[in-house]
Image (tube, rainbow, N blue to C red; front, side, top):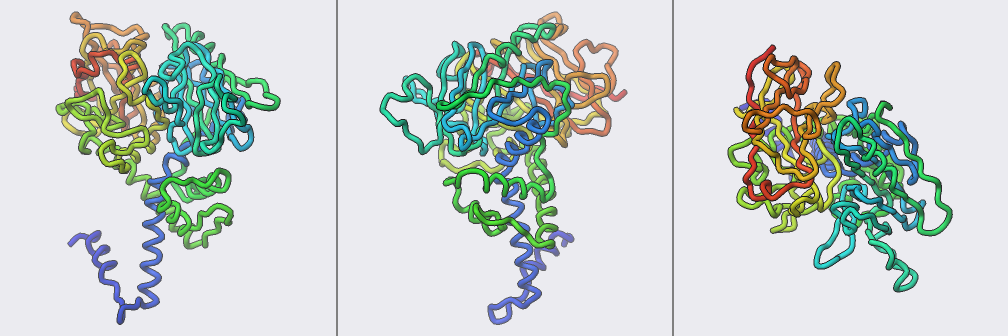
Length: 492
């Protein structure tokens, strides 16, 4: 019997004398129950605390307010510590609170690709047009199809004063007052990213009524920022602050009951005892490790692999024989049962953020597809002290562009290697092609002698990779394009 088995046996055998616990049994089981509830709360609340941490971390660097947009004018660099950023587009990030602004107008410029989520990272519910329900997307994958358009974001329980008052807008409804914008601007050359910046800075946000503040676009590529959620008991303090600040959420009443059992309840002070604070610290550290383990072993999940003989996984699970439809919806619920896939959701929000229909839909040339890997072709975890080779077939099926980005396994931020500005390569770089137009990429702490396409890694640090196909083409959906796996080729 292992020491872990002994612990479980000890809990299972705690005495109940005549059906009642002793003082010692009561104390042990009450603390265990509190700890277990805190662990499950951490895993469940990852999406919302992830959003709060991004708002607060970026706000500290760039300022707060609906009119403030953090613009990564030179692309996003490792000094911004945030989970799995795309450093091959121009990012714009903004946050708003509908309780302060009221209904919020969004004037989307042509050519932008953006999304808007509530603070639980649920995409806002948009209009139904020609049988298509839009969720979260604005711009290219949204109802304006990249031509530019006017959107109105309102609380989900608000109705217009008159029947036609909102007719000039695509109306999106939010279940939380706090909302989050992720905007992507595109460029055709890494030597001139100004078209992407101009696209982001063409957006306008203003209250539907009242005076609008002038837009404030903050250039932050070189401004340090920490936008990661906590791994200790301060996670629960941040969660409580959100619960107190926002509307009562009507989704998942059982888990909100668990929150109340931990002392987090709207309108009540969160004041855990010193012992409970110790347990919250331990629970957060444990739950974070559980979530990271779920991510690292996600290739073992049913429906997680893109291709059965590869290590690449899908954020939103997909059947092997059908890339046109996902097995989960935008809230990580099974399309068959409606139940939340808790492992898929934990994997997503411990290492990633944001979701919209455009990220999971199957419209040729629209949205994006992502393939994520933590393992080499033998199933071993990817590590920075090793050198790997990755072979991609010719002509990656991406109408806009493709990219490969490496992320630190612990933080999920960009690999921060000395002398390297971006831990990525993309189709706009000067990529060397093989004779058959296939692509060979290398990763490792030192450039191999025969390597032209190379990304530096850090010895002693694990890493993982994401391939992105922006504007995926039919060859992707028909499963005609299959990337290789990372193969270890030696150490330097």
